[in-house]
Image 1: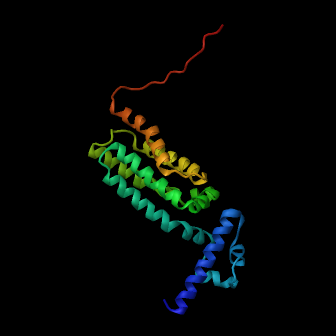
Image 2: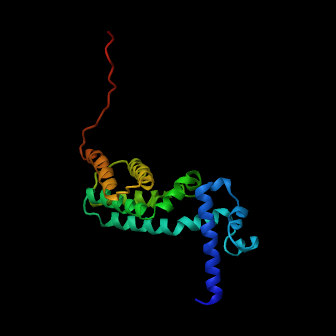
Image 3: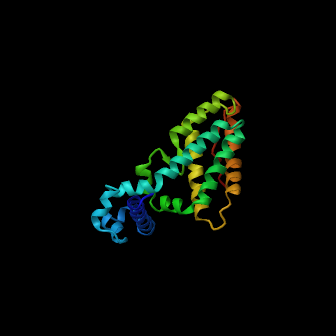
Length: 209
């Protein structure tokens, strides 16, 4: 890398570092481009040599790693030979990534509204559409009973998101324990759909004294 390219990389890195600090400390909605560039030694106009909007900087901090993890989770689901592997191995991969890079997930959770707005179908490395496709494939392969794909995708997504949040905020950060818990929690429910017997939950009414 020549001096020009090295300077460009350093400038871009300085902008990203400053943006990360502000997004973590104050939140996406509370800051502007001037705040970001003001926390560097660069001239204000330099920002526009690398980014055009605040959203573009935010995406640059997240996109590559989330895209990589989404691809990894898709591969894990495709390679699963059983329902247990489909659920457990994906959660283990996702939670291991969270434990290994908690700052990324602190950033995402500190700016949850922005993340949900910018990534309505994907967060924490879980692409909902890719997940639904993989569930359909698992049903076709016979490792998962036929069930409502949209409901299951939401359940897997929501469980992963909330346990991932707890993991990212935990000092202990044990991804294996988190994956085992999520798997045990969901596996029995999914397996119950292998039975044709309908389950009806009736409210219990306490008799009046």
